[in-house]
Amino acid sequence: MFVAGLAVWGGYFFYVGKAVLHEGRLVINYPQSRTAINVGGLGFDLGVPLPAPEFVAGFYEVLVHNRLGHPSFFLGRVSYGAASRWYFPVAIALKWPTITLALALAGIVIVWAAVWVSPRLRLRPGAAIDLGIYGGFGAVALLLALWSRLGIGDRHVLTLYPFLLIFAAACWQWASRLALEKRRTVLGMLVLLAALNAADVLRYAPGYLSYFNIFVPAERSRELLTDSSLDWGQGLLALRQYQLEHANVPLHLAYFGSVDPRLYGIQSVPLRAGERVSGTVVVSATMLSGQYLSDPTGYHWLLQFKPVAVLDHCLFVFEVPQA
Image 1 (cartoon, rainbow, N blue to C red):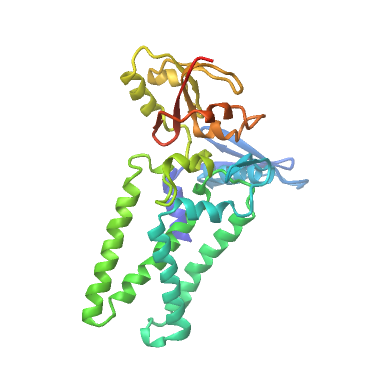
Image 2 (tube, helix red, strand yellow):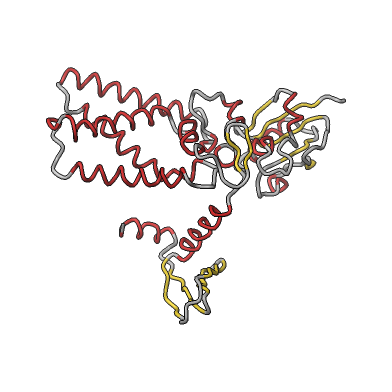
């Protein structure tokens, strides 16, 4: 825990801010801003140094955000407030590489068998306790996610991934202890699976944020999950290139992101929800889902047309004929 805390603090260049308790409010000061937290009617004042104050403030803001909830798009439906209880398990199944998940599950079975069924696998003393601790951290993270109200991307459960990789490594450890002939065969299969896993992931290079597993067609992913699981405003570079290749073609754009497309040299006319136009129309996947719209169907009129292109897996290009 000390090493983990040191690593996080290093991410903030070992900055030390100050936390001031005054009149029932805890104020956390850091270079970019300050965060005030109501802590009740404490009858004393206090000021203390605080390592990585931005991290502490951000942690508090996530707690508040989770309590308030957030609009969520899940398997074709928009919900407001709390996300579906199954959001993160389904997001993991859809977005994490299938081979990695399969190896991790196989590793969990191997570890369980080594501890409870076949002690001849010769785990070193204390290894079962270590693995229990590893698994416990992962299980707690998953249980917290099940009760989260923030269904806006699998990034919120990426803390599970290192623990899955630890258990996936058990497959190699188990194979390395087999008899020589079997060992070569099984280790060769594991190397092949690693290569197939890399090939699977490279299908989305360099836009890994939009990755879905091989069982999900890329053009159908927007029907399952959006927001940071697919479209987080990352498509402007691809859109700029598309416009360079289609010079003098006016664009109507509904873009999900916080950056002004004009900063990338993109010339477009903003397209409002429910507005009907003709010509070249480019719409972000998250806008198509309607996750953040007062009327989630605001851009659904475009779905009667087949996209002529999908840019960076997240921007859908339609050619709308004259009415």
